[in-house]
Length: 167
Length: 410
Image (tube, rainbow over all chains, first blue to last red; front, side, top):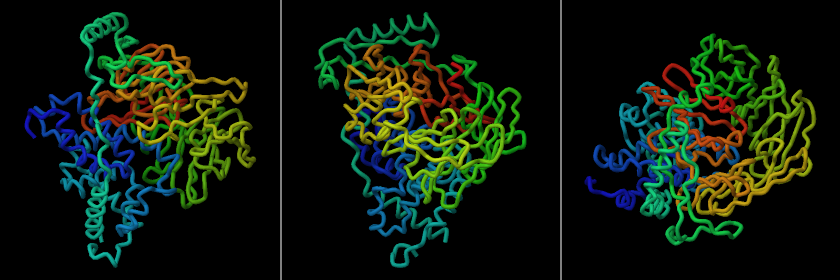
């Protein structure tokens, strides 16, 4: 991304990729759109600084991850209460159809910091040190959050014997 | 096993990303919010200078952009049909730390109780005492304490009972009339619990067949709550063992700020911003004790959420606006987008997220702004929001402890 890229050009080129990231972070389309909107609104104001000093997409993704685990959680929580995922999560059928062992659903039950750590580790393929940097937490916290999350997922996860991609 | 799970996770996340929806057109772009007619900037600068001269963090109120509606693309229309020029985004305000703006509102306390247990602040009991909970396990409330902010001592109130198959652990702690009340839900439905603040076992107040509460409050000797999603206001005695009754005339209504109830609830509206225009949360409210009713007569098109006095909304040009129910006092909110669709807290405060990681508290009554996020160095600051617009407690975490903010002390 060259340093002459305008914010509009950047968004035009990367919005869908960022939306995918927002979707795996949040777990549903509405929150994903809200998270992306909020993150881009914040990044927009800092754009001259962002394109001069940092790789813009990395900056945006960091903003999204941090926003998601910090203040953002309050809004998310407020939504969760009236409409708990177990009462009709819209991706349920899809997740089942995908034969993903219910993991996508199980992820909705994780606290958001744990989910973010897993997304950064297994979707973004970051190291624990990089995750610590992105989320602004210690490496020890990354490890403990990840192990708590995996432990919790393991309680409900049953590897699908019929699915060839799970060995 | 772990390795298998990790492989499955990678695949699950990748699959999910592939079926993610496309980004909504124009997301993140505010084509009109930043383009001001010539002269506007100068005007704003003058206004800002005046405001600074007058009162430190105070920010000037109205930033009305006069001009033809076509300057804003689509003319701003209103629910009542009276067009009104769009507000221009105000100059971003400087947001000083809350401790310097409202020193009496911020309490710095350690993150552990004298017995060494970590705790979470939940609600104010009185000006100097906070209801706090310790965890039985991760995010699962174990015991409740009354924490004294002055001498940093804690007195245990009760143990939180968490029935088997609980999905949502004890939530929305509220205090009043010598009681603490909370709810949890699971396969068994929704349970409302309470305990006397003077100490004693927690009592089951109601095994409601309703959806989890959108709000839970204490009124006299009763716990009162509204069911999320469906509405309807219910009450049951805090002492436990009593019957749950529906409040007459409360069908499809939600608690705004007791004894005021209304509809629709802020969280009932469509998730997408575009779909929310024209739907005003708590447009109509009623005082269940006196029968008095209030309606909103707003002069602008936005996704509005009303409190008792003030309504807050985001206009299609992403400017956050506030006006009173009668349409007066119209202004753009300097710190930007509110983080929540919750009505103004205590009928006067908005929490907004300006750029740069600030968590701004904006006082609609005075125009003053403070930053809730007290610099904490490494580790960042988290923010925990109150469950409802009547809860005055916010807190942020810092390196060594908490900063508990009492909006009621402002």
